[in-house]
Amino acid sequence: MVYLFKKDKRKAEVIARGTKLDCITGVIQLDHSPSVKKQMDMINFTEYDLGFLLSIKDQVQPILPVMVDAFYKALDAEPKLNKIISNHSSRERLKASFNRHLLSIFDGRIDEAYLEQRKTIAKVHVHIGLESKWYLAAFDVICDEFFTFIEQLDIPRERQFRTLRAFMKILNFEQQLVLDAYEDVNKENRQKVEDSKMIVKEKVLGTAQELAAVSEQTSASSEELYNKTQILEKMTIHSLSFIMDTETTSLANKELVNQQSQKFEQIVEFTADLMDRMEALYKSTDHIREVVTLITSIADQTNLLSLNAAIEAARAGQHGKGFAVVAAEVRNLSVETKKAISTVTAMIEETNTNMNDMSNFVQVMERLIQESSAGNLRVTNSYNEIIQAVSGMKEQSEQSKNSVESTVQILQEINQAVGAIAHSSDDLIQLAEDL
Image (cartoon, rainbow, N blue to C red; front, side, top):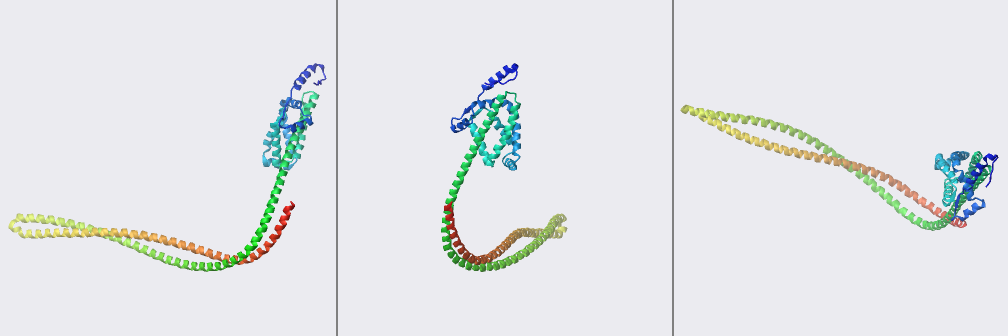
């Protein structure tokens, strides 16, 4: 135990404080990481060092944001670091995370979880492209801020010195952990590169061999393709002739459909005129019905008058016989008139029925004509589409003919290229073997 004081009256206070703090020790539990424990032993980093850090945790917590700000201010000197931050996170979020990280340094405990957290940080740094030199350089700013804090802390000078040493040791230890993690990741990456080279080598060899085989097959196939191209050229010419005939036939059929559509339009006009005439006939029939009704009424009145005349003639006796004969004739005439009117009425009703049937027939015929006209329109549209399609096919056939002619020339160039590929495949095999 070290006692540092200048005045006797403060002796008891200093002794009490030093005794209490010296009793605080941290915890190192690394049963599964013996190599890491050796690293700590090499820098003489012990539980007592953790105890010094743990003893000032409450005092150091308020200045951690200042240390974090200084850390990120130092990073501002390198523009690409700011770009890394903006691409993968935000400055405020990283500050909060780093503040928690610094605070954990003063927890007084180093165990497997502590190591795993540092490894995770290193892997993240490698993933986002943060080089280790920038990470280590910025820690110098943390040390400056911590030195200033310790100098202002009201503790004995010896305790200040031992706390600073403990802080330097744990920073050194953390840097070792981070560098080890960087190296582990780099080893993995180097191994991945070697594995990738081996895979590439195997693939290149396989591809080169396949390329050589393909070049041989291509050389044999190009001749066969040339023969088929000649056949295709003849088929293209025949197809073009057929398409031109189809175009001519389609145009002629379209003209016939147009003529039929015009005739349908004339029939529709005639049907409309017929409907108008039937409507006029309906009106005439109604007028005849009114006249028949009037005649029926007159016949009824005449019959009544004849009955009255017969009664009066009977009353007159011998003097009314002649008048009775006339009354009987008038009555017979009235009865015959009603019979004739009944016959006319029946004929009118029959005429109306026939006219209704005819009207319905005309309407059905008109609907069928309209449907046929619509069908003709669809047929016309179909012919338009056919003509358009045939025109496109004609153009494509002409292009195909030109393409076939060009293919013959291309095949000759392919034969030359196949020879070059065979030579290149040999060079590629040699290059793969040299990897």
